[in-house]
Image 1: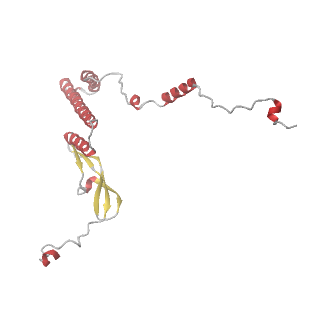
Image 2 (image 1 turned 90 degrees about the horizontal axis):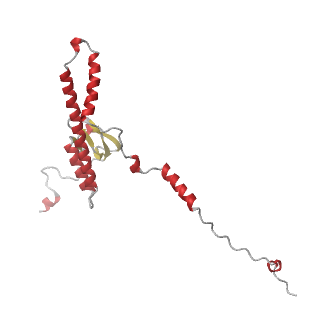
Image 3 (image 1 turned 30 degrees about the horizontal axis):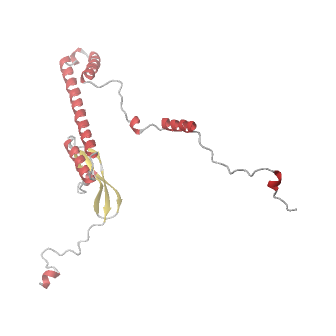
Amino acid sequence: MKKQPKRLRTGKAPAAPAQPVKGNSGLKRRQDKRRSSSNPSLEGLRTYRPEELLSPAGLLSRFTERAQELIAELGEDERPMQASVTGALRQAVLEAFRTREEYLARMVETDLFAGMPNQSAAVLRRSIRSVLVDQGVRCVDSPDEQEHFVVVEGEGDAFEVLRPAYLDQATGKLILSGQLRRIPAPDDSDRPEEGRPTELEESE
């Protein structure tokens, strides 16, 4: 009598291959929600929502009130005229708001220009430089003005600019120092001396 395989003798069917377990969609949604809450978007982080809007009148009122408190602490002979103090504060507040508006307008123009299609890096750089110049910032790209630079690397007697320097033309102060790299000086031995004919001239 022919023997049958053991699994047939027992009458048990072969086990089916294990099927991959489908993920719990609810659990996945909760995990995604936790990840999104722990990593807020960049736009959300940079949204500015002030508790109180800036206004020239409101700032002037607060500054004037504080100035009156300080003036009251002075002696009678040292106290300035109230009208002159208020006028100076008003002028300062208006100038500050005007400067802020001009600065923000320039930044908006730069952002709009950068978002235009088919803008090369060179064109964008010229636009930004134009904005800086209009704001009184001078960009120094020449290594000749070494007082505005620091040498960061390299060897040699010549220099090349790694990063330009930026100067405030209104105050003459250095906003950001430039960076220079030392490089070998150009070899002048191959250049003909002044007044000395070259080999081509001699052959003619």
